[in-house]
Length: 82
Image (cartoon, rainbow, N blue to C red; front, side, top):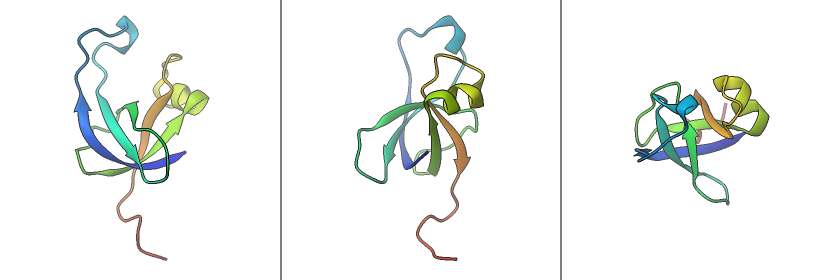
């Protein structure tokens, strides 16, 4: 799982038929690593902190075997300690 911030919506010119109608977002991880394009079943907004599932967990969360990143949770406040 990756904690990151949504930095933009992604509008593909062409997409696999199985991903047609799926919303995509660009997520910048809080830790080191490249930005990710993730399927967004939660309809999050730009600036939202999210939890991203990757690989098989992303495929399971979306029901799409070709998915390798998916938004699975909104994070209300990732800086405060409990």
